Amino acid sequence: MDKVRMGVIGLGAQGGFYAGFLAEGKVGNTVLAAICDTDPSKKAVAEENYPGVPFYTDHIELLESGEVDAVVTCVPHYLHPQMGIDALARNIHALVEKPAGVYTRQVEELNAFAQARPALTFGIVFNQRMNPLYRKLKEIIDNGEIGGIRRTNWIITNWWRPQAYYDSSAWRATWAGEGGGVLVNQAPHQLDLLQWICGMPQKVYSNLKYGYQRNIAVEDEVTALFDYGNGATGVFITCTHDVIGTDRLEILGDKGKIVVEGSKKMTVTRLNRSEAEMNAAMSWADAMKLFMGQSAEPAWTEEVLEFESVWGAQHIGVFENFSANILDKTPLVAPGTEGIRGVGLANAIHLSSFLGKEVELPVDGDLYYGELQKRIAEEQSC
Image (cartoon, rainbow, N blue to C red; front, side, top):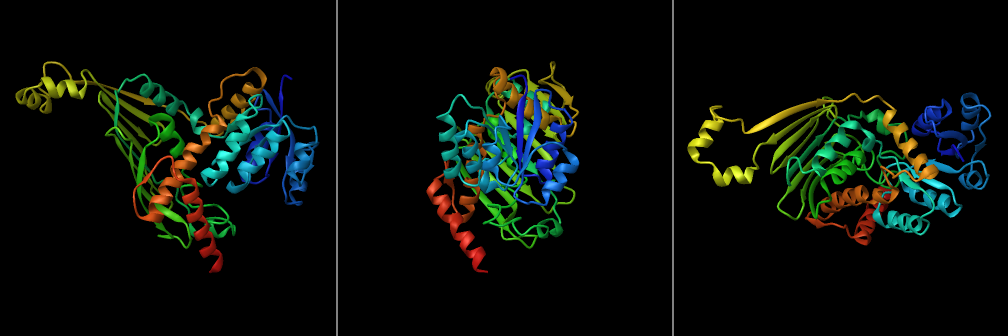
């Protein structure tokens, strides 16, 4: 095999995007081999845009057709785990869209199934891990260039969605159809990046607003406080009602600070001595000179890095990396088993709000599932 034959399950907006760049040959080691959608009317769309590509209305038929080596699942969140299992059970490599699932119990089942089949490739479309800015940020943190992390703060509120967006489909922004709001739809990439770069917190306390500025049952405003267990803390803020939203990530370390703005510009400030060393050695008179810019030597250096991010390039990178793992065992940038971390973090944020108290990680999967079912029942009784 020199190219992976990829099947796309779900020909909606995302599936159509993937099918498009696969059909155009933008993923050098992968070809579009088949399409599946439960809506029979999508067959005409597929025939017009991807002539000659087989079309199925049943994903099991696609998986058993012999047409594909791998599939990507572009379906509602609740279906990702089972479709991943269905593929792996038939020796088909699985690339699941984010999030890996709605609750950790179902993702644990998917992970266990995948880990029992190590010969198969299991990935997740965390395309932001291919963003050169975040790859550089992770490299700086991993190299200890700003020391141990003391605080993280991410305000990501540029997810503005009007009511018309929510009214466009009955399943949108519902507990039964989507499993939540901004935490499971718009913000999974940031939750993944936070844990990928900074690690998982040990405890979470949150304040969520449900239907705050939109006529929906799920959350459209989130403020969460993270406790990393070593004194470090974090704040995560997101919403879908800020039309002039902000994307700003700040990471403070013992030896410096990183500020990312708009996911395009990164300012790295490196202390010449760690804050702990400065605190132990510096007199108040020397500190005053520092404040007034009169120090004999600068206390820090500053580097500003700016990045271009071409739309679609990161997604193509995920597909190329996934197929390269199939073809020659190139290490995965986004292993599917890591998808549970972001799901667990989202579940913990929800659960803290449901219970009105701090919760520990790993999240209690049974407790979260029970609370989720309560909200589904309440939603369906209205």
